[in-house]
Length: 423
Image (cartoon, rainbow, N blue to C red; front, side, top):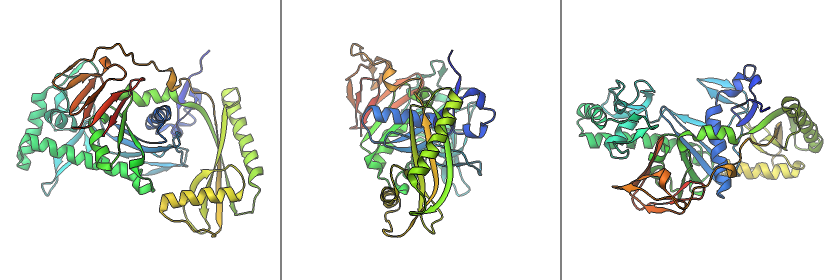
């Protein structure tokens, strides 16, 4: 009999029966699912580092993934409150397809963080919304075909979208096209800052990463953002509009155990501490799932003595190896290290994982016998065969998302249906 599992903020699965007791561990389960799926996509296509870019209706979630596995930190903040549970470090901003354009007291054009939500939603949905949103701006700008039916059922109304943008433009003294372009520039700026927060501000060069774009609106903005950051590759996965849900299937059962050590360099036997902690996490996993884990890994929270913050690095051998790993990470993160200064081990963390319900290689391949269908630069994604390529400007549309290919960018359909864009 199959067991029911639920995703946690750490990107792992636990039994559904544990959910009421561990509700605090589930807060970021949706965005964590997107990170797991983005990591699987990157591993499959040979990208060592990817930045997951999930733009939905009300918000955008971004996180950087190195080495094919999403990082997990000791806690996160939600609504101004600290939640001390393992979590994928997701950076979230109030920028999505439903984000509302408005003028501040000085007459400057702003977008978000307020959203039109699902109801009434963007003006183009025809559900009573009258305020201009990013979706309306994309429609007026020609980035979304006026005859596209979102989810196969929601027809877009260009007239209503344009009327909403016109009202904002009149207040700002701008024509509708300039207003729509201004809204898109503002929201792109917000998302660029978010992408820089998880790369440049963490000591990582975004140009060394591929941008994995998903969510209903991710593909419309990804190519422009990649160019702004000097990123050469954008990957738009299959099922991009529901990619976080796919991540739930790609996630593995998981158990975590942490222990505070507070030892300066040389004070404790690291091999002994590691064996004890890994025995503990193996037992927790076995008790939870009824079978041994497939893999166990251990990390250490380390800092220089006197520092108030730690960096997590893998724990593989003794103190000398731990120092090397920490100083390499410190230099990458902060641009310097303090060779020779004593280090301090604060916490040890062991993670036990099982086999995921679905592997990326279980997904169906795209046939090469499909017949591409395009008209006026708009292509239907479900009809694009593996190996098909095109140059921008162009639009690739499907039921739950659309991809905007910028001028001179090149798109190739990979065997699994991923759209690989060279910016």
